[in-house]
Length: 235
Ligand code: F6R
Image 1: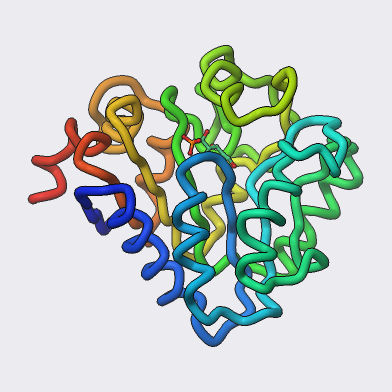
Image 2: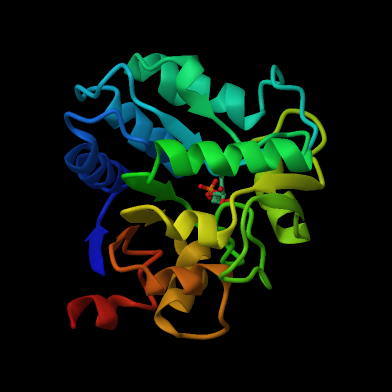
């Protein structure tokens, strides 16, 4: 595991974008992408770097039954924040199916296996320790599936959502995410400190705790998010 602790939002974004670039330069990916407030400045930095226009993109999650044209769908968010600014193609953007239809989920997992493994998976972390939308209680063996969002997630994400927050989502499972060659987990802010510490065996186990088993896990955090793990990062 490698840990980088940075002092500002910009330094976190620059560090994360640099690590992504190292893993994706001169390749077509796949790049595993996330949404939320954490990736936005990272995507801004990435758009300044030269990545292949044929980059293949796999998203972690999508809201259940959301209209793909809804401005707060993860599809539209990724098109706006990543695909267009970086000059990628929408045809290469794959998301778990909002329908949650079993055969569509199967197709998504098969495509991910065929085009994968993902070279680097960018991950945020929920204040309750969720990764993608694997909420507390999710198992290490979980694969792509429909999930019910926790109340904390609904409250946390409402601020990004135009309209009423969906109650369900379709998410890659923890086993799906663990197949990536590298995991890059980024955390900013005091409200993420407990969740981040759960990856180091501090406090309750969370879905993020499972990621500590990955052989190539990189964490980039600001000092507020890293407040409970600073001693670990110096060892
Ligand atoms: C989004 C996702 C979520 C977010 C998490 C943190 O694709 O998978 O797990 O990464 O909810 O969100 P922010 O970055 O808004 O704090």
